[in-house]
Image (cartoon, rainbow, N blue to C red; front, top):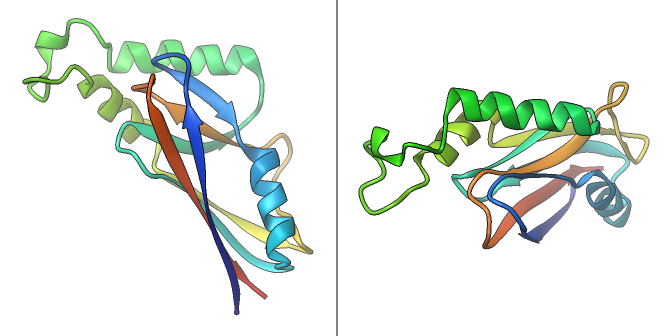
Length: 138
């Protein structure tokens, strides 16, 4: 069985940000030479997410507004986690959006449904973060 492991690094500009990482992951699948297998894409931080959805700016804004309603950043005093930290909301947002995705590789390509793309979601930005990509197969 063949495999490839790579890390992607991000320096986000804002506290919350969604980054389309599909082209980078597709390039790693090509680099791996794997024709049939699986691709795991995993956020390596507890305040970040990897998820699949449509690359549409209005939808991303809707995600941002919805997540802020479910787990508002302010007031930070409403969270017990925030003794010395002010990012409990980011932990909650990550829990909602998920940690990782697994995408089938068929014929040497990521096997997506219509409009599907892979995104890195940042909920406590402003510092360097990483994503693990693990590709296995034949």
